[in-house]
Length: 99
Ligand SMILES: [Zn+2]
Image (cartoon, rainbow, N blue to C red; front, side):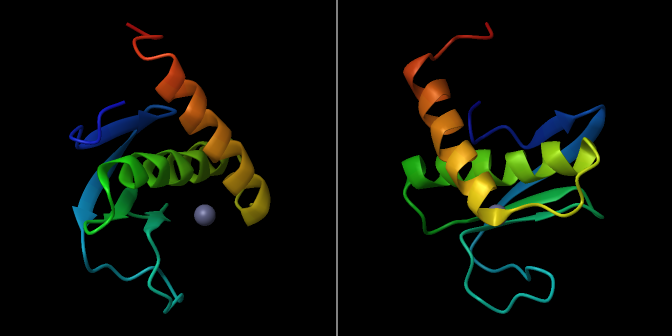
């Protein structure tokens, strides 16, 4: 799952991945590393992060997108954090798994 991929299909919906330093994360004014906007189907990743951290944040935001499209609009941030860190590690340790 290369970060240079600009779109990701989630349950048939196309999410756009934007790597940018500045983005508005809904009502959250914190300087977040990433944000998943379900309405516009956009995943924002902070540009100044390392390439490894960008990939980890992408999997985190993708987890939000998958859960949202699976019908979970309210998500436990701690659960998403723990799950996505492990999923990122599994994907990293098994490159080419889906090819
Ligand atoms: Zn999150």
